[in-house]
Image (cartoon, rainbow, N blue to C red; front, side, top):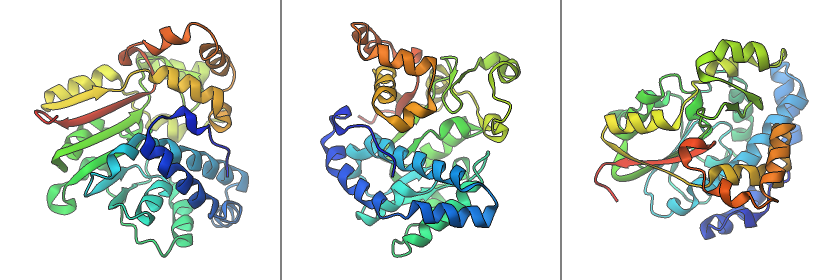
Length: 305
């Protein structure tokens, strides 16, 4: 499995308790055998599938840190855009009442085969997986959830305001939504590690998108911004709070996490290394959420503390 960045990057005690258990869980998965199996079934290169497995094993730790402190108090949990279902399978194994949602749309069709292979490996874990898009969630069909979360998913939902509305509709009265995604106010696209200008999307693609890039994923990006999220939440009478210091944490992760660093080589890696080693790090920590990327925001029903 891929090396992950050090535990001292996080101060959350719930995360620090669960992290070794998740690492042990991931170590049980025969990634090489799964990559070969999926390569045989799909005709895709085994190296491409191994890279996907490595990336999402690494990201499962990031998603765990996102929600660890909220797990114990949630009677029903929904992971939106669960991808390979690694974290949801782990949480279910640990006894948490989690349901995964993964429609595998927008350039992520390969996830279906890889996800099924992983679920076959953990056939003893009874995880419910919804295939409906987030914007089709309803109380009558899916019930309510105390915790709804996603990591690097919101930027791929075409009608994300409707998705927020639907998720809010299935959020329990005192529940919380937590979402982590890029903030495209900052002209940087983290999936490809290239500049992107929201109002000049086509020009950005012509100037910066590699010729061999997966254009399905590029076309799935909605270029969501912090200000848009605030505006949509106000319109839907929802309370929204943004986590601070995320730009510095992102730079710190590029500096410490080799898998993440590989995805952000070049100028970003150089800037990140300088940011965490120079006196400017305190200034970067204080950059407001609206001017930093990624962003993590919590959404609750108005009037709930």
